[in-house]
Image (cartoon, rainbow over all chains, first blue to last red; front, side, top):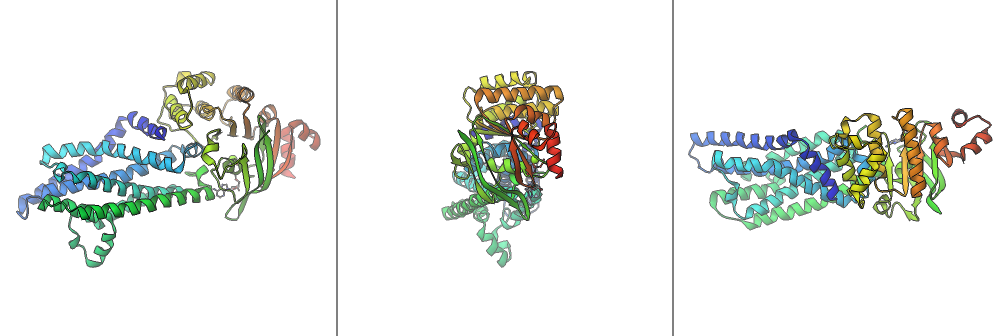
Length: 258
Length: 239
Ligand SMILES: Nc1ncnc2c1ncn2[C@@H]1O[C@H](COP(=O)(O)OP(=O)(O)OP(=O)(O)O)[C@@H](O)[C@H]1O
Ligand SMILES: [Mg+2]
């Protein structure tokens, strides 16, 4: 299990461009949002928390986005390198594959996001640590949801082959507007609010705003998010098992990618 | 002692019958060749024996364990090589072998890797990226990966497909040597008749998803009244 992570650590270690690539996008994201929100505060006095809220949200959302993408990329990497079958003839349990991917995805995500977090402080005077101790729970929630999405897309890859890859990318973009990452839930039309409320994201980002704006930590939001995430995560693991079973039936474990 | 026991094995992909109700046994320590035309079901058979493909019906018993009940337990003692799968290209030869050695829980890994690299003439490439090697060199790395856990049971799908005759010959000798030292059971799917004649104790002939003949190369040659295995193959395929 550790060995599977090791393979990716070698991969990352062996390639500076890869590390830069991991760092590049989150950083650009933060810089972009940093300037956009700064621009808005120059022209309105609506509230002076804008930069802080937008940037904190951007960092947190990027963390989610990266965990999910990392998880998928790790798996796609095996398909692209045609190493896939080698792994499935090794004595690895499905649960071990999931655990290794989950752990390695975290590492990959942190490499990318930490520089962005550090950058936000000197450039825009924003520190996500302003969120206080609940930050840990928020990150945990986002990570769980990221891995959940990763598992679902990976299940699709397993079952339907690499053609499923596009869905990997688009599914995430679909979630941003529904997740109410940058604006309160009340902005959405009623029927979309209903949909959004099924997603754990809403509770997480509402909470970010509530902490930063009103200085109140509402643990019931955090708990709801965690509970929802656990439900989704468990289902995703179940679906991954189903996909593995389906792939064995269809024979895609031995010649996927051709 | 029986190492592999296949009973009424069938695989249907949609409406394609890739493998039709085959049964056979292989004794421990034997090298068995699996011959047959393209698409006759060789890879599918190997895939089922590795637990990669779920049979439509029938059973696969390896070391007295059903692969469906104890997949990972059995995989620890098995290994596989195929020209269609590769090791990660961006990792060096040594890194790849290390990763796989750890996946298989190999003891004294460093020593084992050095030993394999030495014997397979890979030592000078150990710090090179696997993807930068020639296909013959890659093939040897894959073979090193396949032998890293001293497999009791080894499945070889066209193991010398991309090797020049000299290296191919060397590898055949190496496999022969490995099998006799470790007492491994080997199932070898190949289109190279010389290879099969030289390495295999017995040959199974497959056609349209069925095993239609089995025996030593000599037996098959006599039985079909031909000069060599290649002619036997052609006769069976064209019948
Ligand atoms: N995953 C799959 N889905 C659908 N059909 C498949 C699949 N894998 C194999 N087949 C079909 O099953 C049959 C047997 O294929 P298989 O790969 O086992 O042949 P083979 O004997 O290994 O051939 P070759 O000598 O070309 O490697 C073929 O008709 C093939 O098209
Ligand atoms: Mg084949």
